[in-house]
Length: 145
Ligand SMILES: CC(C)(COP(=O)(O)OP(=O)(O)OC[C@H]1O[C@@H](n2cnc3c(N)ncnc32)[C@H](O)[C@@H]1OP(=O)(O)O)[C@@H](O)C(=O)NCCC(=O)NCCS
Image (tube, rainbow, N blue to C red):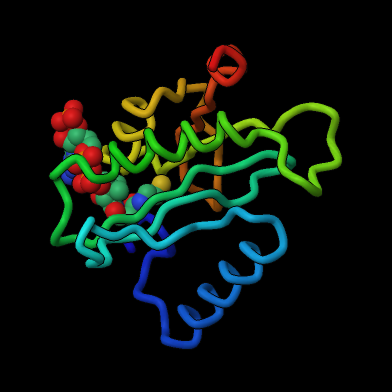
């Protein structure tokens, strides 16, 4: 939680988060989804949030599963899903949604994941007093597939 809230969530906060995911899934068909092994063991979550009028790539892997390439595999699959579904129902804008990713500059693992999933560094921006590295999927990447 160091880079996603800074502390462990309460049960009520987690419950509200799960309710939000279910509501988003029902309303628009995309959210942050459960990630599990082929035999059904939960290992994390991954999917999309909203960033301005665009999508934000998000992923979290349970600590005991770190370092096995799961986040890289997950983020790459999510990028492919985004490319295949860039203009969902209810998205009023003329242009397809863009895909952004961002992480605290100290979150080296997450920055590496974004890079390996094909996002390109744009710039460092302030978020709540911390420098965050912002990445984006190039439009050409999205339209070439
Ligand atoms: C970020 C996170 C998802 C990475 O998950 P993971 O499954 O361990 O990542 P991968 O195994 O796919 O590793 C991705 C790359 O990061 C590198 N990496 C992993 N942990 C690292 C660390 N602590 N320091 C530096 N590099 C690290 C890996 O070596 C790999 O790069 P490589 O292929 O060049 O060797 C995981 O650490 C996590 O869930 N963190 C907490 C939640 C979080 O920060 N989410 C992202 C918010 S922006």
